[in-house]
Image (cartoon, rainbow, N blue to C red; front, top):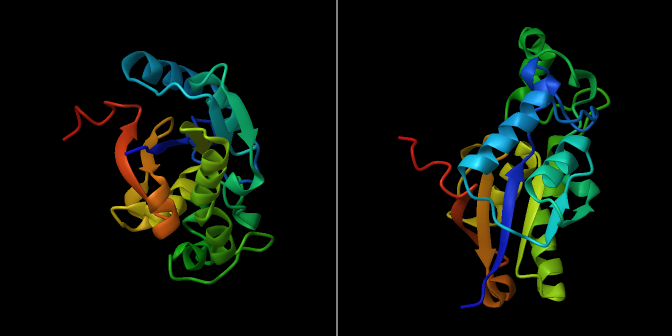
Length: 211
């Protein structure tokens, strides 16, 4: 069976992550020194795939992660791979936000509240959930059998929950910085179901010593 493989990877750490700030697409931070060091350590200890093409969020933390993990690969930045925009909550300390009743109301997964100036949760889901199949469609058309995608945690969770077997809730697809999931499909799966299947973690071997 001829599979097309796509490796979904969360970007590395930024100063905002280290400082406990709520960072979305409205804050374009580069990787911090610790983030680059962590990615280098992951590359040394584990195996990342070699790919000719990397789809990426256009935000610095994603494109820089792609450059570190996949030197020499062609990077294609796609706006719809951006993280959610958090509006008035953007770039604020989480320890401050948890005391804000508006934030508590919005963070409820069943809430339809929208932070002032922010992105609607359903709009974010609609924007990102279909990106997995759009990337696979490009791969099928260009006969690219293996590629990577460097994006944000929320984007990966939406794509996985919408189009990947085994079916799971978005929060069950959370992943660490610099890590993620390998998914695959064949032409029949594409035409029949528009579903892919998860078959490994990225980098390979990352979870072998856990549990």
